[in-house]
Length: 363
Image (cartoon, rainbow, N blue to C red; front, side):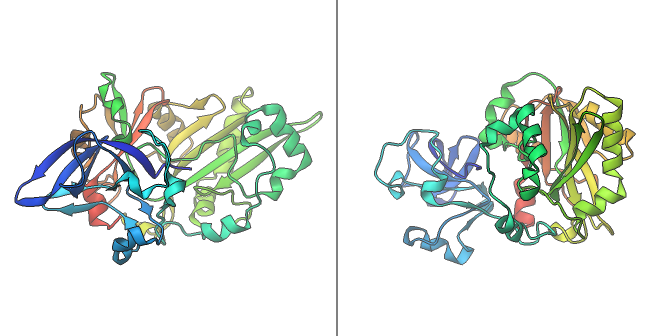
């Protein structure tokens, strides 16, 4: 579960011109408007990230007009992302800097209603709970046992051997900016995340291939009218991934992950006429490969990779990185959502989402 509320330390407090009662606090790489009288440099607080929804409790009643949602806002000429609360909102106990208190506070992730063209909430209700501890699925022998029994077909759970797509925000990992190494920078495309995989099943006298299509959180067993299956057919993804496995006989499975854009998704910012897919991950059992190599493979399969901005050294501060993230999209007449930065080998990565994009689209 993603950490949406945690114990953080106030880094610095900056005055805001013309404002006596509020100030701009630094919390890790985030900037948050706070009541000047409530916090000092070095204080611990409960920090709640953007993209969060707080529970309907008396202490959060002041957020009712905003549907209890925390989002990026601009006030007094300052960008504020998130909200700070005193530790007194927590039950009595011992808390340390870095503690995840998402469940204690009751914070949920905000999901845009038209973010996906399938009803994930309804799908999730129907999904069967996993019967086995997740860590067991990382072993090949155990996965083969599960598939032999056929138990995997009773569950719509996301495959355990593939990581879900959710990049760390640079505000939560500013240490990456200390690196002097070059990073591959790609445009962050605003769509709905999809995962497509083929698994090789070797038996005594026969080899078969299982095709897997997933939304961000769930496996979609039944072909439907969603953009996931539309792009699957458009690019013959099953065929392309099977061909890759046939060429790489030592590989047990292969997966690609990308953003599906569609006239029905995210307000169609890119003004497309039909569903399309921009791949950002090429994943093997050994892990995700680097973006430049992945782009070559994907382009060779006749598919599209997310726009690569370049390979470069990064700014040294979070504010500079957020300014760097701002720019025009390569896909349409709109500003881009931001950028994703990856190490050359693809093992390390983070995203920098442009606050101006979030404000413009009320996200």
